[in-house]
Image (cartoon, rainbow, N blue to C red; front, side, top):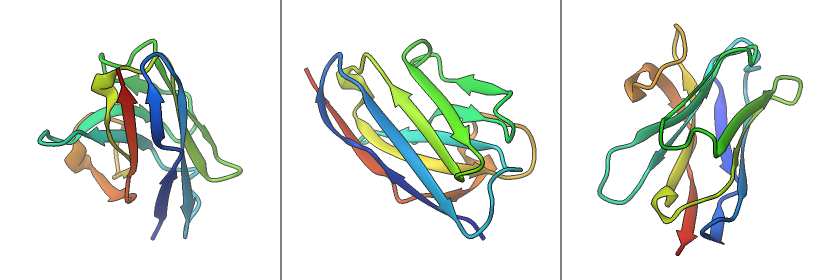
Length: 124
């Protein structure tokens, strides 16, 4: 069983940057597709970005395209999310997740392992 732990959240002003990291343990993730989701207060958890096991396939939500970059380092068992030009609407708890069998996708119920989340707050 793989465990996921997110870090890197915080409070920044609009236009700033943050880099989130997802450290994994228990099993190597080198063969696993991974994703980032976020959940704002009172809203559903939504897909942010996904990456295939090799890093060769990447998918972004339209709302973050051009601003966020997902990457992974299989040797270190980590997945990262670089977030630039942050906006107040990016404020949410961000979760790292492991995709169940199959290709990367945006449907949250196709991800079967989740971290505890890290808070990202963007001030106007």
